[in-house]
Structure formats: structure tokens, C-alpha cells
Picture (cartoon, helix red, strand yellow):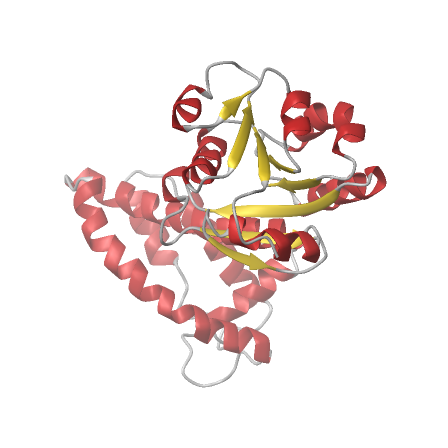
Length: 291
């Protein structure tokens, strides 16, 4: 296992996230070479001790471990396809946001080229890198994960999900789905109270502790879903969960009902199928088996 900072690392892509990743490596004393498509992005890193190069090829040749933090799946291929021979025998850790299918495709591409491949999903914003609460999910080569885990842990808590290179991306996007729907719910609530003269800031002081407390229900929902019995006692029924009043109040406030109407459709589908007396967790079945 690599336990020192003797590894030479190259970072491709110096957006806000790539710069944060590279900065953590430089701070830890790793020899770090940086490349970005547009010039000037490496200036601060160079001042900290990194080396900037003009081409992606120069960066690849400088490091045994190559970190790709680029715009998207297409940009990974655009940058790395011409360098597949240079990458052969090296290790690629790709933390570019990709879909599970794209991550698996990149893993297959890397295997054909003789590149050791690890895929990562970053559960943090750039300012969190290297700080408590930062988490990065990995899948792909177990050897790569375990060999470089001390380096990966510089960025945040590192979790490995297995050889299937698409699993980290799947978890990443699934967690983001929960986040974005929650954010949309907050925005809806803020819009509801705005006509009454309540600022979003005032609403946030109420919403944050309420939503935080409600996350305590996740485990209970999970137990019901995993058990497959939506009739167990102690659940709020789908009939009681009907959001008609919430939708009507939203319309009365003159705002869009789209965010809440989505949840109501999931509820109504199960009620229409005769499950109104069963627990709210049953909307999982509406999502799992659409239409």
C-alpha cells in the first residue's frame, strides 16, 4: 500500500473541483502536475508548489497516477483517447461526473488500453474537499483503490463499492436525486410563503431544522420497503397523505404546483390501485414500476 507522498500525480482539469483536488495533493506534499484546456487556471496551484504543463500529454507522461476531473464523459474521451498509448501501464482515477453506463464504458476502454481504472463520485462541493463531511465514492479496480487509499483520503472519506465501475456513479446520482428533490421542496415552500411577505431567509430558519428532523424517518421507510409489507402498523396511510389541500393552497398563492404535484401523482397511483390504507412508503412502488 502507498503510504507516503512519493507518488507523482497528474491532474487533468482545473475547474473549481479539479483545483480543489490538486490543491489538497500539493498541500500534502505530493509531486503534482496540472493541466487545463484554458491557460491560467494553474497559477494559484503553481504558487503553492504544483507544476503546470501545456498539454494533456505532458501531464500524463509526468505522473504514474492520473486524475481526470473534466467537464463530462465526452470530454474524457476527447482528452484521453489520443493518449491511450501513453496511459498504458498507468493508473487513471476518473472523478468526472458520468452516468453508470458511461463509467462502465470508460472502464472497458481503459481495460482494452492496459490502464488500471478507478471511477469516483464526489459527494462534496469544492470548498469541502479535505474537510469533515466530504465523501467520495469509488468503484472499479480494488487494487487501485487500496493502493492509493491514503492519497484518496486526503479529499474526503473514501468508500469502495466493488469492481463494477458504474456503482459509484449510481450511488452518486441516487443521492443527488434525493438532494435535488429536497431542494425543490424547500423552494416550493419558500414560494408559498413569499406572497405573505415572508423572506426565503426567514423560511429557511424554520425549514432547516424541520427537514433535518424528518430525515430520521428514512430508516423506518427503508425497513418497510425492504420488508415488502406496507401494512405494518405505525405508518401514515396514503389516504391520509393525500396532498390535495397543499396543492390547493399553492394554487391560491399563485405559484406553480409542479414540485408537489409530482409527489401527489405517486400517491394517487397507489390509491387508485387499492392501496390507500397502506403506508406512505408504498410510493416506492410507483417509482420502481412507472406507469
